[in-house]
Amino acid sequence: MVWCSKVDEAFRKIVNEGKLEAMKECLKNGIEGLTNLIKMAQGDLDKPVRQKVMVLITMDTHSRDIMDKLIIEDVRKSDAF
Image 1 (tube, rainbow, N blue to C red):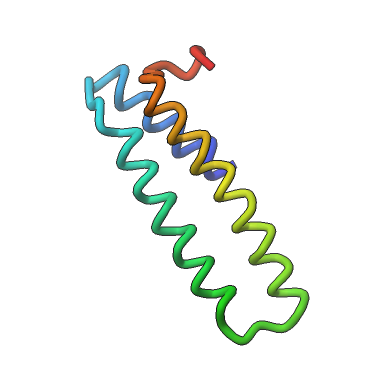
Image 2: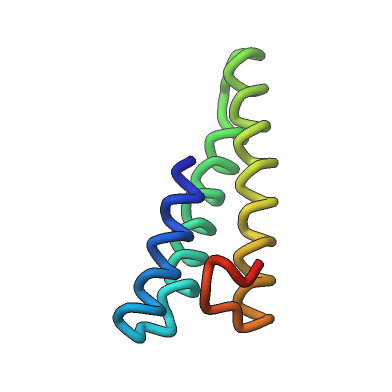
């Protein structure tokens, strides 16, 4: 849900404020979070926590790819995809 809110906020900034870089900023923040999760997974974690972190990495990677595609295809409204 957090990802949906952040992407929706980026779309609102694009439409309402003309801030065309909003989705790129959202992607940058997502990559930073993903990087932090990867670093966490490289540490000493017990099995249940490691599994949770790996699921988050998978979900964030998918989210990153979607944002990247939105940027490449120059999508500027949430109802366009």
